[in-house]
Length: 330
Image (cartoon, rainbow, N blue to C red; front, side):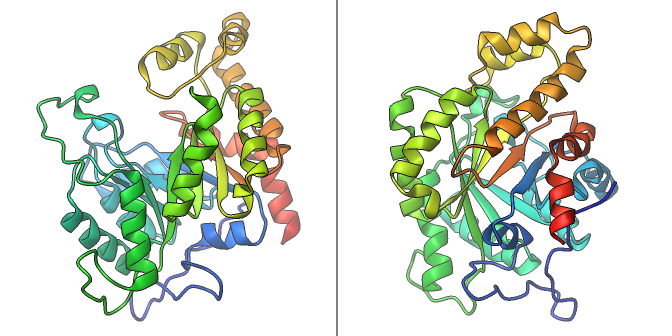
């Protein structure tokens, strides 16, 4: 399969990140792709429960050649796995673009600011700021949550470090971290009429890009994006719509009932239920959704979440035509 991925910019002599291009916040390939006006692709990596770096590389293999950056989740769902920082370190050394996820649930402001400097020094150019799920939904509900920040205060803090070259304490940094800041959004969850206003707060706090939760209701997302464009937010932030292949009607119902922030219309469940091969139909559905989403003004890319189905990501991107268009543009 052809690839549109380029190696993440990295200085082999200094063993650190290259400086950002003029007008860019970071040296990341994801930011370069978006600022060139190309339709970007990011995807989540299923983090292994392993200390073996080969397990991380194996998990990233289906994503490496068809994404602009790979999201390293930070104990999503409050379940413990290998850390986002560890995954980013391994993938960056392999020349792959990464998105470091930071959840406010587990670390205070001292640890977070130090982690950001460490990540930037390793060449991480993209950081997704998340409040984080409560520990009660995970497999270790006895853990003590921190929540020193929420996603908005985290964004403001990292923007201060980058743009003012200082910690929250006011102490100056020798070198500010060249980072492209991201946040998450749930466009299809009530109150839908306020979702664009919530997005505006994140843009004001410092978000450069947005990765949404799963989009299964295109018409609701279309109305959200119309409001986003009416407010002029599409000119201030890059929006990547979240999509993913459903395995079956049963898994769709489970997600709808158990995963916060997920809206799956009955028509989607019925389509999977009627299919002779639900898994294949789930892939086709994902491709259909991407094609529809690409036509919506203000959308700059897609974020693919294919939990335990990462092997399908390459096929999905190829079948949507994104890969062919990117190669043709070269």
